[in-house]
Image (cartoon, rainbow, N blue to C red; front, side, top):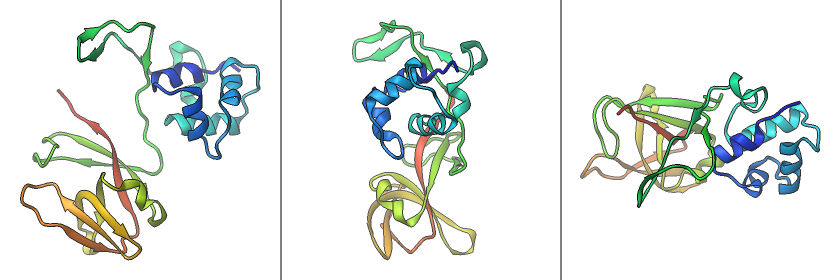
Amino acid sequence: MFTRIRDVRRARSMTLDDVARACRPPTTPQTVGRLETGTRTVSIAWLNRIADALGVDASDLVGGKDEQAELSVAAVIGANGATAPRTARIVVPPKAGADQLALLVSGGIGDYRAGDEIWCERLGPGDFGRALNRDVLVPRPTGRFLFGRLIDRDPKRLQLLPLGSGARQQIVANPPWIAMATRLVRSL
C-alpha cells in the first residue's frame, strides 16, 4: 500500500522520534521509518496510530498525492522576511475529530477578534492538567459556559482567568469536562 506518512510528517515539521513518542502506545523511530518507506507492512491499526500521532485522519495517509486535499508551501516567513522553502513542502488541512468542538467569536475579547473560530479538544477530568496555562471552555450549570485561561487546578476545582481586561479569577468546582483551545482559524 502506498502511504503518505513521510509527506504528512514533514508537513507537520515532526521528526521520526516526535511521531514515535506521540503514538499511543509509544513506538520507536525505526518502526515509523520502516512504515514510511514500506519496508514494514502498514496495517489498519498502525495507520490509525500514526494518523492520531500526526493529528490527521487515516485517510490522509493513503492514496496518491492528487487524491488528497493539501496546499503547497510557497514561502516560509521568518525574521529575515519571506523566503522560498529549501525543499518542497505541503500543508495538510486539519480535519475535525470526534472529541473536537468549536467556538465562534462574535466580539473581540483578549487575543481573539470577531469572526475567529476557536477549535477545541474536549478533555475529561483526568486530562485537565494538559490544559494548564491554555484557554479553555468550561460548562456551567443551566447551559452556560465560562471561557478563560486555566491558571490552576486541584482535584476539586479549577481556577480560570477570564480574557477581558480587569476581570477577576473564577472558580469552577468539578466540571464534567473542559474544552482546550488547540487551533485558531482567522480570516484575513
